[in-house]
Length: 104
Image (cartoon, rainbow, N blue to C red):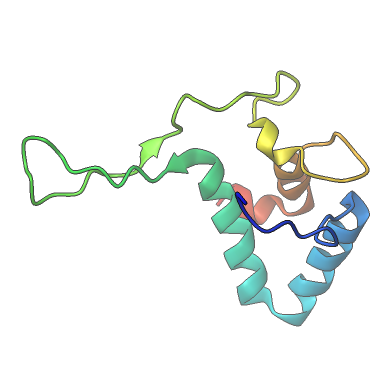
């Protein structure tokens, strides 16, 4: 067994966007944490590697890892095409939903 499958964890585009609108009003701090975390996960990939020249120094996160398949329509990883009912990019939706979180 490679992992536990969560059959009811799938979400539609409308479900996610409705939840985020609710979250923004109910708990702005958690909302912004989610938005910024998602933004940063699209940009930086944690390597966990040690710098060869300075063995006590952990290497900084890298700008993408170059191994992801990129959606040619928007330039984001295809991992963000995660809706059950749409091929839309979740990251593009989040950016459109709240420009403040993505363009500070």
